[in-house]
Image (cartoon, rainbow, N blue to C red; front, side):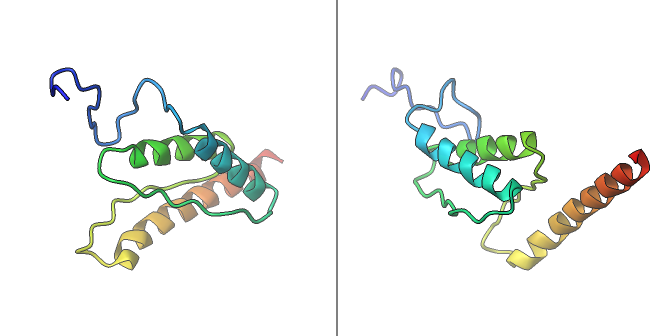
Length: 110
């Protein structure tokens, strides 16, 4: 294909005009998010694919849906050179602080 006319333009997580062909994935994520709010288990999702196929865009869309429904979320980049625990600990603390502030605010509102 002519590289000038090729519509593929990797943008490292920048959202394209439309998430074409991804509605089933987004619907599955929405179900999982809504079930979690009810305390019900759901199926996990794993996004696999080559660089530039839209994994980060999908993760961002799922994160936005979760936040809109009241979930607290956190994103990390996980390079192979760092231990996962070292990457997760600051984010877990961040989410716990948000929870603490939310609970504190609710307690003062009643």
